[in-house]
Amino acid sequence: MRFACLGSGSQGNSLVVEVADTRLLLDCGLTMKETIARLSRLDLDPGMIDGIVVTHEHDDHISGVARLARKFDIPVWLTHGTLRSMEKVFAVLPKVNIIDSHQRFAIDAIEIEPYPVPHDAYEPAQFVFGDGAVRLGVLTDTGCSTPHIEAVLSRCHALVLECNHDAQMLANSDYPSSLKQRISGRFGHLENAAAAKLLANLDCSRLQHIFAAHLSRTNNTPLLAQIALSSSLSCERNWIGIADQNEGFGWRQLI
Image (cartoon, rainbow, N blue to C red; front, side):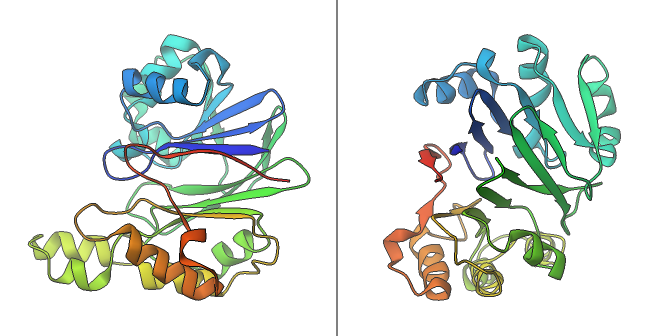
């Protein structure tokens, strides 16, 4: 298995997972033009994508899904709640698959374990991808951790973990108080210290790669995220990768 990121943050999110000849996108919150350009950086084109798995209906995760799926005849997988929230947009797509956020499924060579998360969306889910030997856990867009989240993400070989904001930077920002409360609430976004605490509760004995993701450009820095996560793992700060908004990150192999 290998994986790469097209971009991560409030301007658009998308991740690629590949096992053998099966390639999936997790979300597509970028324009079609930008998605094609960023796939090209990975030596891919949309015709090589076998499916799009959707986490939830917020624009930075879903805005490019329908157009890409329609133009290139790509099947889409999402929860019933996410579909209902975007029913008109997805009604014209011929290949829409409803998933249960507690039920594992497979798309060709890729095994997928969805799990529910607390976030201000209709039926949000995050995912663990596997090939029978290694597992990639993805967690973004959650306001807090839960015992179930930690059980699912334990013993993963790679993690893409939300470090959305630094609590002090957010508190001191010029954001309206209502927005601060939404971001920092239990249905908002995971802040650095909370991500580090979650990570400390996981079995990381198999971990080969970890990336801090969905960083706020206004209320966080890559350095603060790296410091938080590296303290939990007792590792070198530079071992913590950053999923960048514009660059994402290149292919990472799991063995």
